[in-house]
Image (cartoon, rainbow, N blue to C red; front, side, top):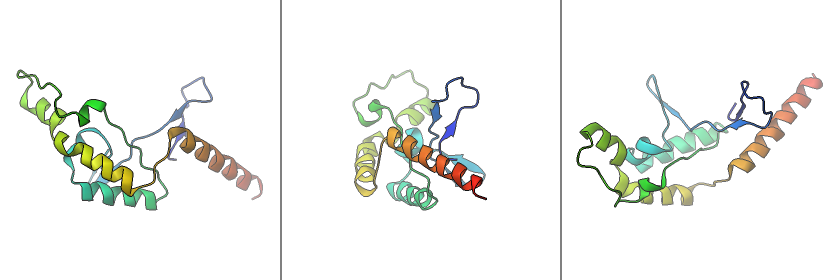
Length: 130
């Protein structure tokens, strides 16, 4: 399921919104956020988002505000691999984000939760009639 109840939570209202992932070989890549969204080409992001949407899975995008801010301080003592993970693709991030927001229809977590609950109730009703 795209959105799942947390079985360990005492709250019946806890909902998990898993990151959008695509399979690349044996790896599952969370392509709509962080390092991957900054470093992967826009056309790849668009292709993968179209793919998961065709599977009736919503795109879940996540990012930190500093990822758009190219003037974020970059500590000189930061090891190279941390520097690459943290800052690669930051110059193109805002453009990718803008294009994704323009090219696709987006909603809120609240609307996704309502839709998930509606589908869940519908599935339970179907089981009762079989």
